[in-house]
Length: 311
Image 1: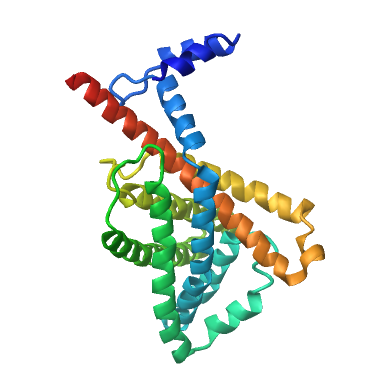
Image 2: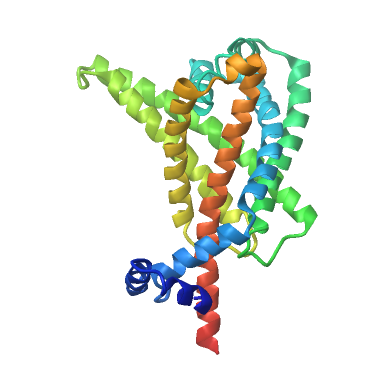
């Protein structure tokens, strides 16, 4: 797409051959655009889009929204008339958090989850809705400051959309926990009938599948309605697939790092948990932006190709 970049790359041995090969690979659905065009536009967006700075802003706002959101959901748990819902929800929360961090706050989480605090519920409701809207608004703002995005929503409309998306994401989380619980009940029933020999295997695989679907659906939802300009007719996009895969990889590598190499608890004590959580949220914010940049790059290529054909 950029003649100057192509000219510089053509002077580098091996790289120029890769560029030629990438230009020959046509991607379906991009009106004849090549793989090289997508990769070039994607890298330009990452380099010129201040990715880490935007991720830092998202991480701070989302980190501030994380605890009130969990507090509100946990306070609601005793009122949910589903047997075993509390235990499954706590299990998913622990799976979402890095190793050794859930253990630090386990007593507080368990106390809130198993006792009814009316005053805490009313305060948590107001605080969580406000701060979760700020967190989602920071994500949408990070999307709009992409190098490939030129159209933005007004502040009021953006905040209203952020609030609605925050509530819907909370509903998706609770629904995932409920489906996981009924799945476990179904597996136990099949084992009692003698149709399954090992129910633990199926439960573990099912929990992993629902965990992946939770990430994929949440990310796809953010990408589809996150900006005014970058929109796809399909709910599932290349960016959401990339983000889901990178998130799963990051979860695995980050767990290994925390368990094998990190010594934050020896250096900082209990406050080290907050540092690990902040790092964890920041890495997820970067991955979220990487997936969006892929969607934004493809969307801009389509617009440029459409404009070129009209001219």
